Image 1 (cartoon, rainbow, N blue to C red):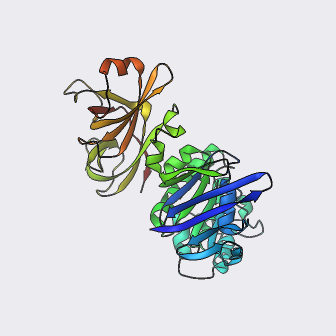
Image 2: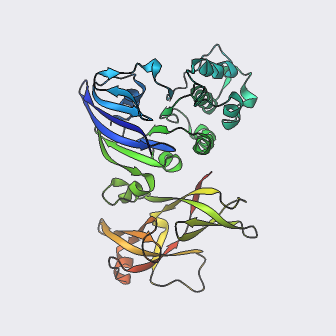
Image 3: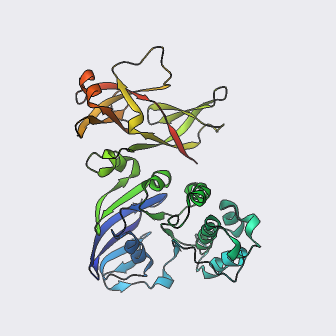
Length: 363
């Protein structure tokens, strides 16, 4: 189901914006691209803070913009989180949060105060002055204030950009929690692909004011026509569900489509969802499943979907997991020597040896 149907065409000074996309009704959709490509302009158009007459905007089937007819910003049920938290310095954390409740025009999408406080880990901060918060704490309060306004959509404009590495690591688990807790779509602007890999389900890739590609994150990351697949840190991202858990060795057996991937992780419940990241450089290939004398525990059947050279001495192999090659996409970056030695061909079966699997989200 589509919740946001947007099209904006127009001029902003010397910058030309010409974008159109539809976003799913749940989860995190990332607007991704380099600085200056128009991500924040699109977000401001959705919020009504920037008005570009040529285009349209429908949110949950309701027209917010249709050509020159525009719903004013104060009548758009939007929660907006900026790079700077913009808290009221003279108010406590609790009073900053309740300010969001006072702005709410409806209770339809609003979370209860205690729900938001628990979700963002703010209970011990409620009485504190907003002047005495760390950068990560300030952003968590800003997110809470936006959620308490009862938005139909949550807009987040590079909320981690102004934070140091420590503060980013502090806040990201709370952002991951939004996946499970919120029944509204989140549009997340970023130029940091590692953030997008951890948080997003869907991506709109922007370039010079236009949409270059859009689709599920896992598909775009492994699309051979896009730049992600050629990067040294190219990665494949999967969502899987715990089928069984081996408490003796601390290993979760995850179902990713018809494929099973084994991941080291603390105790987790059967059926819980995990997000995984596998770097292309950590995928080896062989003709048959090794029977003994190997420490790698993930030997996955796959088929070769595409072969692309990476300079003179490396090759990118695009795989589809499963005996029939109808599963999730996976990339492998191997040397030209290994490619020639294996004599790899399109559409033939292969075994993917996963040297390392990174757990990047626990839902």
